[in-house]
Length: 564
Image (cartoon, rainbow, N blue to C red):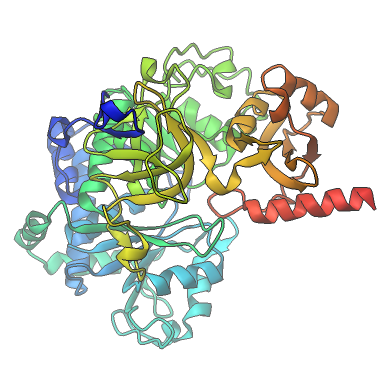
């Protein structure tokens, strides 16, 4: 993961990764990827899932590939053509894999719909992406997707598959339910849908797979919408598969890997982490529809999981499960030694989780590192084919090395653009995208991400990164989540305020946390105030990101109420 400074003599913050041609990769289309891993790993177990009846089901790589081809055949029979928008509204189930890779095999573009969506948010996503075919499950947890569709499009109930005509969503023609066998109230059943594909010759599927180009559109993801309406982010076949192959290397796994995931594949990071760390090395992906800590713990034990893809708040919930300490979790070999999970007495792992910087618009990492590459606390070096620079947000001038400014990027996995937003409103004249993230480079070309530019707190003339403070406070054993914001102040400009969610059964007060912070943070970074919130009070997006403007408003109101 080396890089070169392309303007060394000026000591400016612009770095370019090694040539893209030096990156050792496999097929760069979704259909080609699935065919390649099936050929390589054939009878290896690829997928494991406990279905809705409680039965454990398994698929080899050959069987997974065959299921994807069945979906491709059925979509071709249904009239899907090049660039048809196919929406996938499914939790972490095998059908998400079959539908997404199968749609790509048929030449379609997959719209990865967020299963946390409210009815209003689902309507927005379907309309923005002009979805033509929608594949969904009946519902998950409190979400009732079939009911939502009937509410959004009343015409569905009176339609037949392929003949839906709705003024509100004029391009939508067919809705398919993976939990039904036959058509019910206008929504086609999964088995009936797949049966239609039997009349499509295998040679036709071969032809559509072969016709795919790595630069074709493949996926549309929606941004989290933490500060505005979500944007529909287009990604190419190449971006998706390039990052999957890379993540297989980052995670340093082999065919014995048993990878667990309960986080939605409608997020690009989860897509790369799960499919890359499992499929590129011939390992098995153990699926859980959504995160339930007790069920997850049992899956770890039953399926001898070696690599769990967990977020910190999920790890914290696992430690609260009955039988946590007594469980034998010695198979968990790919657990970062600095994370909560590694504190379990049966886990002895020296593995380090890959670190990096990226976003949905870059299909995750444009900068990354593993092992010794991240021991300096950086996000790593610029990856192959990418160019990253730090600029003054107001002037656009490239800043000297060591100065914090806006991170600006371009490269082979950069989005093809947002749907219904002009390119000139997305990219600058040189083809870079401006991230609104703050960071700086050191002389070795390692990037240090400091948080969102709008979130940087200016207190007493100093710049303070909320992300830095949050990382320190999260080391306290009583804290489940923490979000730091800046609040206006008469003399300091802003003061640092940390908003804390405690772990269940834990106690902590403001003075105690401030004392803890003093051990690691400079005086101007120590929160002037610490406010405690319940999980219900925190304004979160469907992707579990904090809505900072709303949180800041809550903080101001609470502090004002205290002074009244």
